[in-house]
Structure formats: C-alpha cells, structure tokens
Amino acid sequence: MAKRITYPNIDMQRTGRKLKYIIETSGYTPRMIQEYLHLSCVQPIYRWYKGLILPSVDHLLMLSELLDVHMEDLLVKKNAMPIIYDIERYNMEAAQKRILLYCKKMYQSVA
Image (cartoon, rainbow, N blue to C red; front, side, top):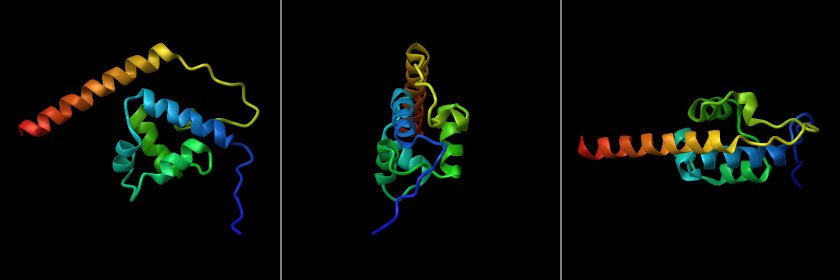
C-alpha cells in the first residue's frame, strides 16, 4: 500500500479549493491548464482540486504567471483564517482574460 505524503504547513484540501476557484474565475478550464503546463493528462489538475496532491514548484510558478498572482497566494497554510475572496476583482479579471483568449483565438484563425 502506498504511503500518503503529507505537507505539514500546507492545507491541501483548502489549497485545492482555492486553486479551483482562482482558475475557474479566471476563465480557464482544466484542459486549458493541462495544455499550458504541458501535462500528458488532465487528472493531476483534478487531484489538485481534491487536495490529494500539490502542483510542483515549476507548475506553481507557471500558474502564478498565468493567473497573475504570487505563488504564495495559490497556497493555503494550515490553521490560516479562511480567505474571503474579492469576487468583484476575480470576476473582472476573469472577464478580461476570457476576452483576451477570445481575441487570440480569432487572430489565430484569421492568420
């Protein structure tokens, strides 16, 4: 039976929920994240969301750049107070990113 690795200072379940929230409100799907990170399948992303595993440091760095947040902002420490997300800010950023993605796709289809 495989041992489950624990990270004593990171709340994996809350980190997973936070990653899912930030990614979804930024207008990205798990499939888009898979392609961006060059993952062979989408399963690791769903495992992040469930708090079963954490993204690698490389993936956290790439996600932080894509989502325009600091790496530390993607993680939740154990015993930290729950974060109340600034929904208006994330909704605006998500809308802007969706528009940018749409424009890029339209440009690529014309070129």
